[in-house]
Image (cartoon, rainbow, N blue to C red; front, side):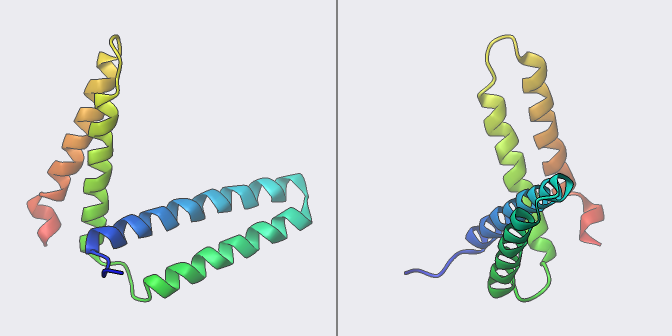
Length: 113
């Protein structure tokens, strides 16, 4: 197996963060439903995700990873814009505008301070 690139690690971190957010929302829902058993299972899943994060990312998040993650999001917005159908020009423009704003912020001189 080859060593994971920095971009691979950013994608892994993004996936784990998305999974964790989803499981935490599920926990809140089970809590509101009063289902203690399901809540316990959700918490076990949360602990497993956190343990996985600690294994792969024992140190604090690197600022460069934040920029890489933001640029992945910008690429995703551009991809979504390409999927817009006829009659969705306003959505297309908003998606492209969002991608451009992210890219501008990532290359901003203020970020380099």
